[in-house]
Length: 288
Image (cartoon, rainbow, N blue to C red; front, side):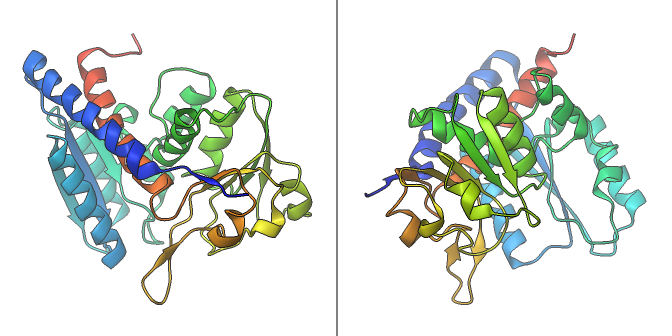
């Protein structure tokens, strides 16, 4: 069996064209240019490269990009104040707090100072609660991107047994909720799960987000499984691999996301779409 590639680059490219047209129309009708503010504490080469990528994508989409770079020893109070100021700024429509934060900073405390309407990464607890209730909210970018790929390729979700390997805030938890709302049966697997292979063998869709290179191999999968790989793992030779061993899994799966080029591009385009959504909410609040 040769798996179909779930090509995130191609799908994201199409969505970016539509996004840019919407932004141009928004500016013509309302005189507003969406602005994304990225708050980065410290940073490393990989994080800096990601910020540069987001800046370029914003510019290509006719959005304004604003970077607030804070030093590694930034206090909790300074981070909180930065988020509060951006939240109160009417010229800023979307705010992205780059994660992870240094160990001395508390994410949950920081999020209390972020306006959930501008939380374009979908990590604010209010957005998580609204989504759980089926209300309008910002969806976590990676999870929404994975769901968008499944929908684009007409992969059935309703009634399917899905394994969610990983229980992180960025992917595992929000994606589990999205899958449940799509009427899938979801088994969440984590570091303490017993009998992981036995579980995977029963699943028609497997989503993996653990940050461990090639953790899931083809031998662990049921033939015909659809695989969503959210892993981004940099190797010693600077190549990037996912959490799934692509070579072996692609011989067993019916469809699979490549790394790079699968869920990553979708995450980025959903981020920009969320900025547009936040801008539209500024014009027509959905919670009134």
